[in-house]
Image 1 (tube, rainbow, N blue to C red):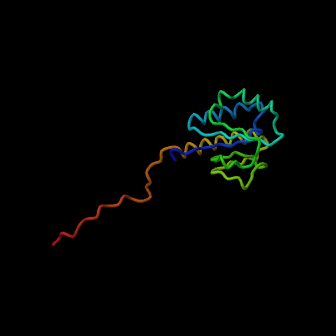
Image 2 (cartoon, rainbow, N blue to C red):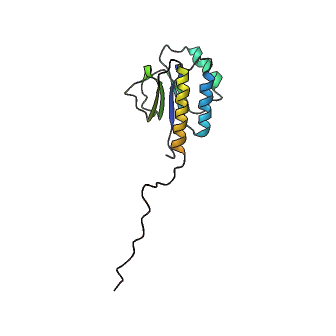
Image 3 (cartoon, rainbow, N blue to C red):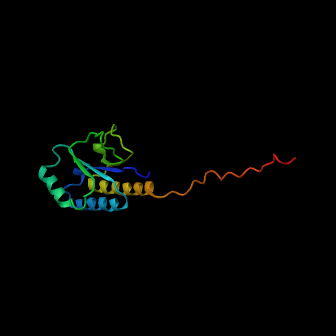
Length: 150
């Protein structure tokens, strides 16, 4: 999948203002060092205040310096493709199209986001790593010529 565009989507309000929110940002940054991807953060209207957003952006703009979008909606933006979606069971949308999805149900949403990031990292490493040649078919033998036997 050379040249593929990977995009990770996470609900910002699942970890914003948590005392351990920096763990999520650090994990995202760590994964980005392995393989570039777009980060799609979203939240529901009323979940966050403008000062929450401003504080988050100021605090982490040096780590989240790559292609990051923050949108106040849960609906699909057809201009953006989501390769990996990390979402809580309460927020899942069966109509949301993505390549891979991690649905967490833990009461502690931050824990679910961190587990989802670990799965995203594993998936990204697997997809982008070199693969050994397929061994399910042995190489074809060269056919012996017998048309010159006369």
